[in-house]
Image: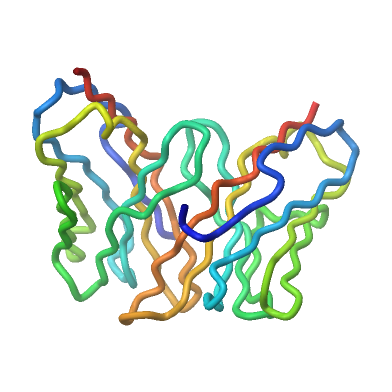
Length: 115
Length: 112
């Protein structure tokens, strides 16, 4: 257990429905990242927060995706009008500056299946 | 654009063997490099982090090296055990954001 939690762990939804995932980072970590991983591939960066500010978004993050981190604590990732291509593992990671590095600690992931 | 490649994609070895996993990256201007382990259907566990100013890091039976100038890193696993069976991912960060760019991973099977 890295200390990063994600809920739900699994989500099955029908195409066209909206889904929301939650990530609770390690409490003292100011940076929070979302990644997406499809079967047999390495994770791909989606977006990044420093405290409550969303500082970078990947081009993978279409306008159907939105992420928030109110008050710089937990974060949510919402997908509107889900498509089958959204089926993947969604991973959250957090980090802070310690010993000169920003080592990232990952949560267990939320596996999304769109039917 | 930074690209990370891991070779081989899959590896099967008998228990007790020493092995090396390879990772290469195209842009040597990295901030750090992390090796992760991923068990099927699970999240990522950080194994080792090497900062750009370092050449290697060790943890137990694991040793990771970094050669920035050639764009390469290796993960050495000594005396492999069946419990080491997993996918090993290499990732680099560059710039201020700290976002990780991952390779596709090497899936390791250690046979008893």
